[in-house]
Image (cartoon, rainbow, N blue to C red):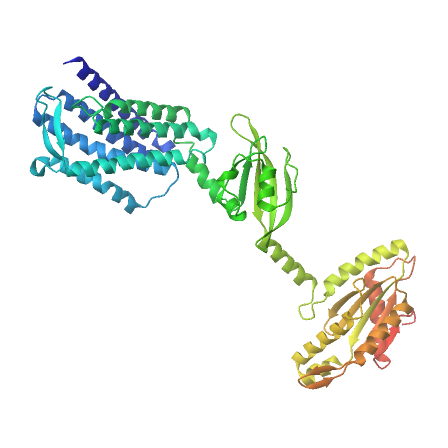
Length: 519
């Protein structure tokens, strides 16, 4: 056996042995790896078939033996290329349906069949015979139509795998780049060799691709053992990173943008890959048009921020946390949570908790809260403080005569008139049913009485215009003033006002009474 042939067989056998080792190594550890390992097992198994059959072909002495081992080669080689593409696709987190996977394998399966039956149709090899000059096991061949179809398809698949891997280079963190580089080179080496073979720039009569596959195998072996290719994968990170419902933006220790997820792009439409590597403050100014509201240091911070996008108001909670990356490089992670709907719901619930649904003024609960707060403040400052409880006279008669819908209109009518004469500092509320309350800071009982009579007369002089005609009502009011330097609660004060209101009703209604101790 001549020296070049021995070298060829040794290189091809080395490729086969390494791929068998890789296949078995990953197979026996498959329980510790992710599902992508199964693609790799099938990939290396088919490459091993390709390599060993190529080696046996070079050991053959007859055309029949060479044809047999060539047929075996084409069981492994066409399918291995597709499996390599699928391995890269799944490694990068790209999902393919089972139908698409099967579709990719159809043409290689046809090729394997065409090679096995070539003597019947000569569509793959028009001529396939022992080289008359070099002799066995070197082959003289003339390619057929299907060879060209198969060659174009295989080259396209190898190129697609290579370009896909390269396209993810910028998007993948530095920790994963050694893995990705091994994938890129693992695809690049056999692809370039196959191209040189097709251009007839390699040794005549021998397929050189199996001779260089040991290089790819060494790269894969290094990647599996040193960078944990099947246990630490960018696809897992990307799936988690992009499935988070919050916008995530990652900065390095110099506050440059290094990564962001898809939700972040959705939140900030101007955000794009061109901003990677840009100073965050500059990027934020470009995105929003104003300075970032938080100080960015290694302290955790949180703040809500309101932003406008195309006349749409959105509210975000921004959380800033320190990030320790591999290699102890410090950075920051910014998490943007869209709390617009939550805030709107909170405001709605707060409104419903504090406002009367019919009249849209404070309800009893809110009135008591404000009244309690004001009462404590004025007691500390020795400022006059009075409350008024007021009740619509004969309101039940209105409901019974005209219906509750007219009664509701009357309540709104009263509120509209009162609000037109009251200030924001005067806390006005629906106390319950047809009863209203008014909290007056800085008012003595006498001053409150003047205001009460003013309100009473305004109601008396403005009838409600309804579908039932004009409806007139009057008010009875009771006033109580806080006694300076007396231990008294707001409930006690309101109880006094209630007694004064009862006194006004007993006296004939449509009048204002001030609480007196005799009551």
